[in-house]
Length: 357
Image 1 (tube, rainbow, N blue to C red):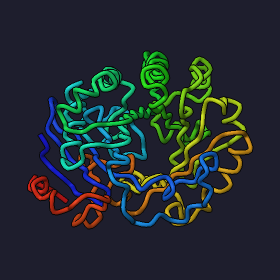
Image 2: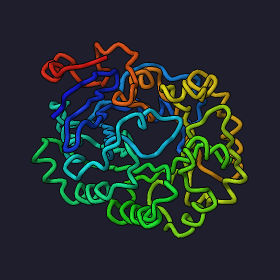
Image 3: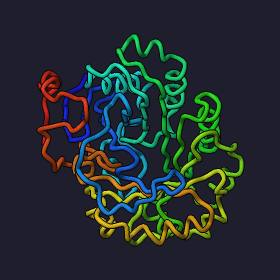
């Protein structure tokens, strides 16, 4: 049951009541790669000097749903608001399914989408939750049932698992290898695996991840056992603060650029980052913070994506590390959803659900 609904320019952020309490979820549109990424290897070569608060693509072309995999999170990342949420354990299989179905139900006029990206990234560390794997397998094998139950036909479903790599989790390596098999074999390449790295300096990583992170040398050993990726390469993700170090040569010595690409985003302006003075100077308005890092990584042979959100996305709490349940507050006009093909007047029934600022 959806209990709180927050219309934002790119779609909906919502809170629901599930088996152990409240979880929050996103159901949003996408601007399109040409708007907010630079990726030379994909043909997007224009430097990003700020992203316009514009209109999203129709959901019939691309839809993004981000679900919570845990009630809160046991990790202690100093750049994230989710640890403020009282931790109650893993979301169940049914919790995941209900979040997914609730997200689809908010746009009842959309009956088809070319692509639906499902991110396990709102609240929680998904690698801890066995249900994430079982649910992803179920989704792949039950497309017809999903269409019958939701009214939505999905051409390509693309689940993405993002992990901060908890060092003391004994099943970490097995779970990583299993997701590689899901990505390559079950989804025929149409799934993503993203490792949150943020810095190549282990002292910095110890501070930002609360000394719970797997060290890069140990991850490198797992990486050697990972099969060659089918489809998009595995992703080394850097939520980049001006003070974080990204040593391209060190990264290249640890990870095969034929298996791994690198993604760089600005660190997000949530409560935790403000409290800990973590920020990307001019990262939302200028390409300058990313230029040298991108060039160094490309020289080492890496494919590099630089992704910059719009201010609408940042203030609408779409970006990672935010959580209304953890104290984040919307700082944006919620009077209209800017998704092409969506009639805002038709969403009036949904908006009767209580909202809070």
